[in-house]
Image (cartoon, rainbow, N blue to C red; front, side):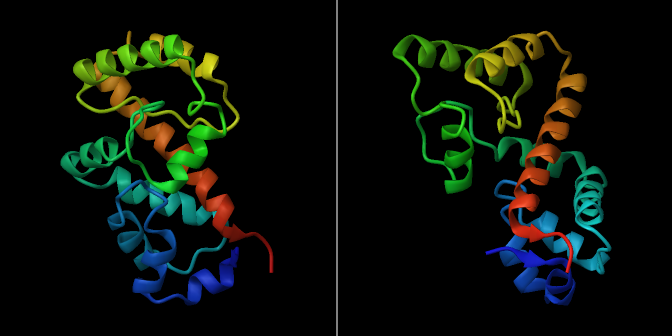
Length: 168
């Protein structure tokens, strides 16, 4: 069930954190901090405040946020929303060859960057995801850290769109 922006702005901090704490994977601190910036004039404003909360966090918290994300196509426990997002592009139905390739690329990525490969997968295909991970493995750590955060911001936007009803 979606909530209106008016309802969002009336929420106390515990309720806001309960509703939005999962938007940034296993990082309810983003919602806790963002709540202080109410009222939000639009959904875009809410998203921007949450992005700024992450941008202004210490590097260690940003790194923890990156590391909180599951590996794509990994056969490991993950949040229901992550499962839903990954299954929406077929990452739960890979052939053994595809799975082995994802596993190998995820391992190479993790070893190089020290956090998992993160991509906003809604609207993507497994082929596009494989191309992206191969290309992004060429990045420097600094460039890829920023790219991973941008992907998280897009994931958060998708999730916020699922929660908040624009308009009245």
